Image (tube, rainbow, N blue to C red; front, side, top):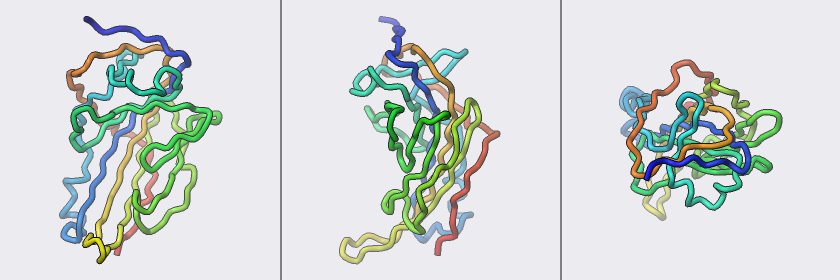
Length: 205
């Protein structure tokens, strides 16, 4: 069977999310030692794509309970290899805040991105929750943040450091999509070179 066209019950906004997370120990505290680990590279993507103003999404979305009524669909690509069956898209409702990784997505006049701090998700130093930016059509934004979690003698866990880099690129609002049957042929996605930066990196001691 070929691919099928699915009409959405509500027009859906679609942001592309690129994710690059590096967790390291004290042996890589020097930036030169981990420079290659945090560089953006092209993605081998299976999350879907937009081509000539048409939206293409994997059929795994049909398994998500929110999908029939959602009005926000993320396409997410991670620098780390995904596991078989791992979700690469999320579906949300825009009438309330939606948690996504270390963020919240809200809809007022524009699609808005907020930081949602958590110790285990980000580490210290603590940051306050606040509005990072508005996501506007084809205006990519990169968010940079880092932190550390202290060692725990009781669990035997050493101090760990974490750098997180995200790029959000709002691709538009769609009334339908083409459902791609899995397994999907991989698509190469390039990280947009021109992008706004929100730099929340701190010197870690």
